[in-house]
Length: 123
Image (tube, rainbow, N blue to C red):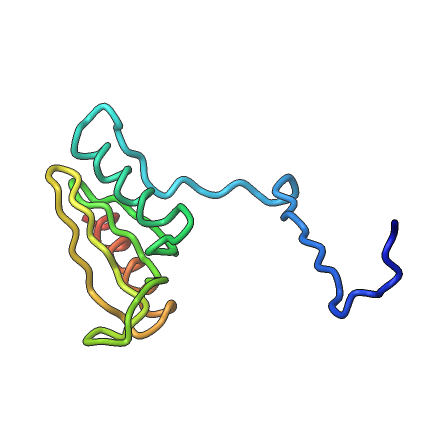
């Protein structure tokens, strides 16, 4: 039997983004997944930036030799010793290793990534 009582909250309709109208993104970095170090770096960035509770939102990426630079926003940062949300992560491609440098804003971390891009292209 149907219920005649109206809902107290409005129903929510979720719309999926239309990716067919989006321009394809530029390739940020090319990795050789046959190389163990590059495969591990790919898996690490993928694991940190996807899934139910990702750690990072990748804002930009650039490869310079054996280092993959990732401008990231920390999504699960605590309010402890490092309250900064943005960092330039350096992921090693020849061994297992990640280090990062914190920045105050998304614009600052993207500027740092552009600086790395400019210095590697001029060298």
